[in-house]
Image (cartoon, rainbow, N blue to C red):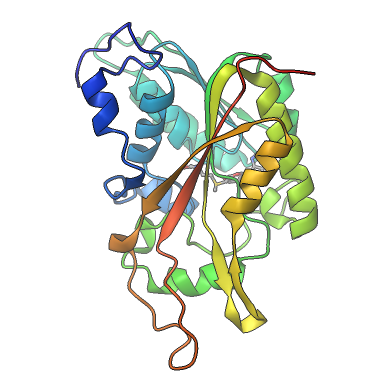
Length: 285
Ligand SMILES: C[S@@+](CC[C@H](N)C(=O)[O-])C[C@H]1O[C@@H](n2cnc3c(N)ncnc32)[C@H](O)[C@@H]1O
């Protein structure tokens, strides 16, 4: 990796900045480790590293309110950023802490950055994260219970089930606090509140990146649900600027399905979206 420059907010040189500015990412999917397969809904480490590299520099604070088995904080540790992750399920927290400990133990047994995983409901995030302290949040919330049938079909056809970020169907847990167990209306109301809290803990000019996937459920007469549009609207209603949209190309990960043949043409949903928000430099009350 090239040496970071002090001239830019993220330490990238002009050449690196340009090379990393493609808005379709077809090179971040990767085979999952066993602990990631067990979780079933992780995003790739390479994706987390790319986001952290673009929107922060060494020493900045990275946050993930739905940290799962820790991909965001593990990527932050690799890249010398401080990080806090919150996860509801203890078993996932324990895994994240174990992998993080392995990452932290370098030749001299110490690193310059600090990472923490908190086992709690992320609705309590203001108890753990200071206001105006986060440079970039990277997260992927569980879907509400609305897209399970569609994801179930897609999962069966994944080239490698372990390689697809959001495809494993089924409830994440029996916990009522789990966003994955909420109906769509409650889910949207709760997500809006999380957006507002993440806004409050983010530095002016800081970033927030949500990894989401759209879906369709033609059996229920729903041709297309634009989850990324909903997420964009929730963020904007909480005060965020809609800053960018990046496509995570997953064509290499999925077998093509014959959809709607021969009467209605549908495309295969072989991408996810990174919806990028920015907190204004000056927040007006
Ligand atoms: C899509 S997964 C995130 C996976 C993560 N990006 C990774 O790579 O490991 C969403 C996670 O949110 C957790 N979760 C659900 N409701 C939560 C809540 N209220 N507070 C904190 N975490 C929650 C789930 O247990 C699940 O692990």
